[in-house]
Structure formats: C-alpha cells, structure tokens
Length: 136
Image 1: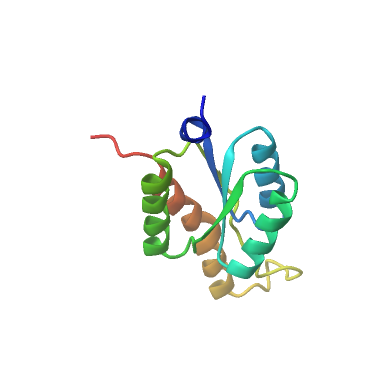
Image 2 (image 1 turned 90 degrees about the horizontal axis):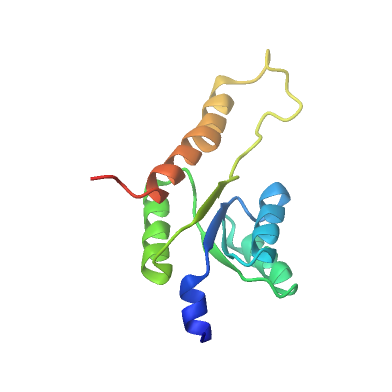
C-alpha cells in the first residue's frame, strides 16, 4: 500500500489543549499508537514547540491554532480538518483554564467563575457540537 493511501486510512485525533500537561501526553500516546494527531491550542508558539518536540520522537502530530471560546475559530478548524483529512475519529476535549488557583470558593469572583465555565464547559460543548456529524 502506498503512503498516500496509508495516510487516508490513518485514524485522526484532535487533542484540544494538547500543548501541555495531560493534553500533551494524550497526544503523544495517541500518536505512538499510530494515529495522526492534531494538537490544538490558542498560543501558536507554544503549540509549535510542543509539535516539534513530539515530532522528534518520530510521531505524527500537527498544530491547529483554535480558541474554544470562539465559535468561528472552531468552525474554521473543523472545516480545514474535513477538507484536508476527510475524517475525524477521536476528539480529546482537554482545553481548559484555572483562573482561581489558590483562591477559596468563598472568595472567588463570579466573573472568574463565568470565564472558567465559558472555557471549560461551553468550550468543550462547542468542540463536540462542531466535531460530531449532524444527523439529518
């Protein structure tokens, strides 16, 4: 089988928030199992650094810059995935923020909690809604 056909048959994963921590390790592990992995993050420089480091291990990872708080950013990324790869097999919803580290729940500002929920809950929901094909 030629390499182009192999790439078309290769399973594709998106790891949102894949530039560090659990997301980075999830991306590395999926790539080590033979999946092609798209690491997403908001910070292009940090994402590029992570991709370079994982690629040095001979693994298939690429960067997609996306902000899970921006519906248009997500839609554009998913359209690129459809156009470039024609499939999406795995979504790891790992993008998240911690804005209240070290602050008691009794003292945390409501605006901080709203921003946290916007990213950690609604961001994940947006990614799912954009990634899963609609039933007609």
